[in-house]
Length: 164
Figure: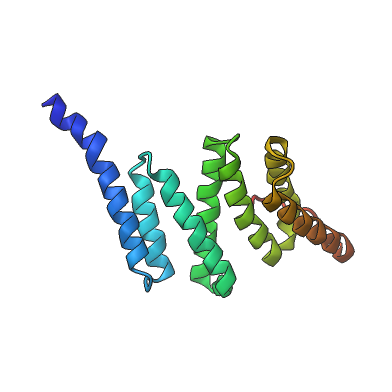
């Protein structure tokens, strides 16, 4: 009996996450609310596949930014969901450069549409630069954020108070 219960936790949940990821890859015509629900369902399994789910989710969020869908309610809701999950991932893996860079790219894209968040994105860039100061993606993100911070000063915007 213990073998059956142990097998469930060891095998079933990761298989369901892998199956869900394949379904997300295949169903490219899903709406953003459907995608958000699918990602949430996969994250609820809380397996070692959670990082893969979040990586695919960040890729989807970057596509939302690139396509301009953030102008719509569903796009904004998806971006907020993705940001909340990436912040959880940063807390779980604070010294992981791969995680930080992936999330910084998303945060930088969001800061471009919401420049008041530039100061907060800089905090994550600084964290990553402590690990690897010469990384090209960090240099690009840092220069973008510096430009946004200058624009904020010229526009007289106050520093944002919430995470991206």
